[in-house]
Image 1 (cartoon, rainbow, N blue to C red):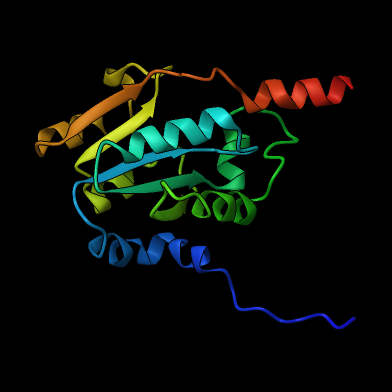
Image 2: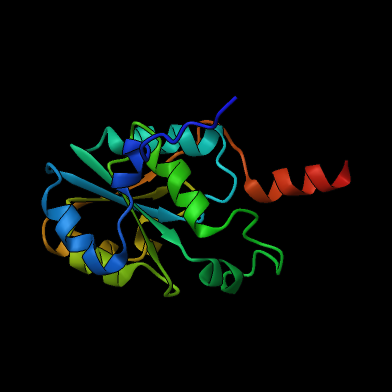
Length: 165
């Protein structure tokens, strides 16, 4: 049996570097929804949240924490479980996601300022007034939402359960 070389999956085109993110955003339909996170082990809670975020606009941009920024978040020295490229590829494969980029800073504020989303979204564990970029997005007439969890899942809890065996 011979291995067949297949073309790169089309979802990989949704992944852009932070340096060219502005070009990718320019081509997305508005209103643009922006969210960010680690998305280490994608689970039902993530999938539901991203679909709900996407429903708030015409396109969804997801900014993913770099591996180094995940470690700075204090999630543990062994996190993330999945490398940045893998986390971005899984997110890009979701129908609800239109663009994926990454950030290495402690917050995605620079990306928010550059993308100028119409809608900024985080999970329900974030009060709107504490969402990074909320003041700026509201200042240019956008909306900010904290989406309540429908499926309370946690990558940290999943990793803990796996390790307990």
